[in-house]
Image (cartoon, rainbow, N blue to C red):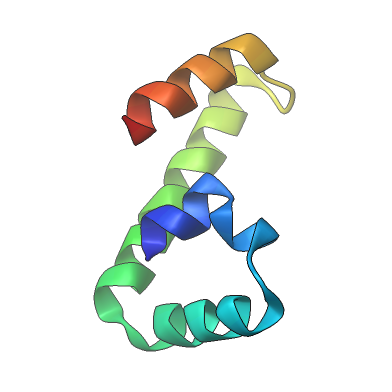
Length: 67
């Protein structure tokens, strides 16, 4: 569930699916921890490498993380 949220799948999901996913993530301690860690990592990377990372590097990293 949390992977779906961080991979962008939630953005293209149907309205009710997005509602159910958000409800799950609000109640599930594991998902809350995972999303909190992802936000921390994202903030740290933005501070370290700047606000606008190279799109090619982002795509390559995303592919590695999701495979």
